[in-house]
Length: 97
Image 1 (cartoon, rainbow, N blue to C red):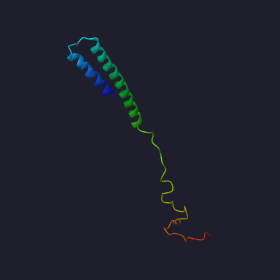
Image 2: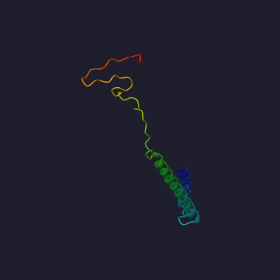
Image 3: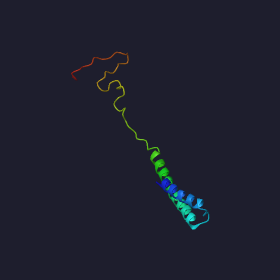
Image 4: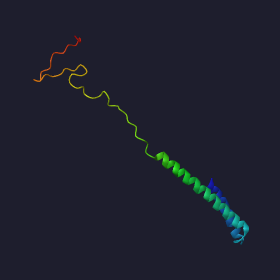
């Protein structure tokens, strides 16, 4: 939008120059309008850049503990039979008795 407005005032400034009025109040007014619009456009663009950079900033890492319970059970845990010192596995009672 600002670029369209700058284009509009640039067109008027060129018309004043073509009419041979390089030092007129009208030309000065058009150039001041271009300057004001450009300052506002720059300020808005700077704000947009800062906002975009803050959105692109790395987020605080979130920790998920997806691996809980997925490890191999240690011998003797979760009903797994524990080996004796000689490497033999004792008989496993499936009835829990």
